[in-house]
Image (cartoon, rainbow, N blue to C red; front, side, top):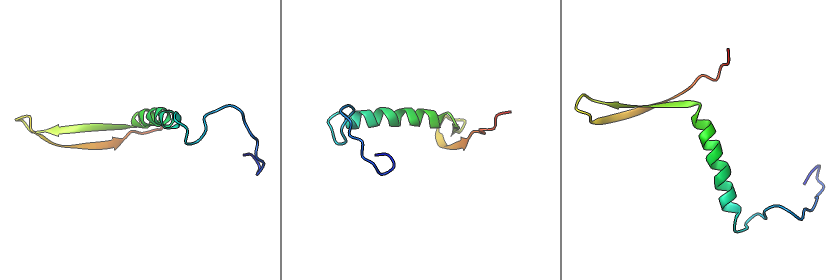
Amino acid sequence: MEAEILHETKSGTPQGGVISPLLANIALDGMETLLNTYQTTREYRVKTGQWVGKVTKKRSTRMD
């Protein structure tokens, strides 16, 4: 649909089709990977090695 005019297509994946969830997962995985490049996660452990938590920080997106 463009400018409130429906343009029928003979190709593509129909919404609700069998392969539709797979294609959505592929797209979402790529988006997740891209978004994760903008943050860092650091785990904290005590001297004994026991895990005590983690902190996620956003990376600066400034380009100098």
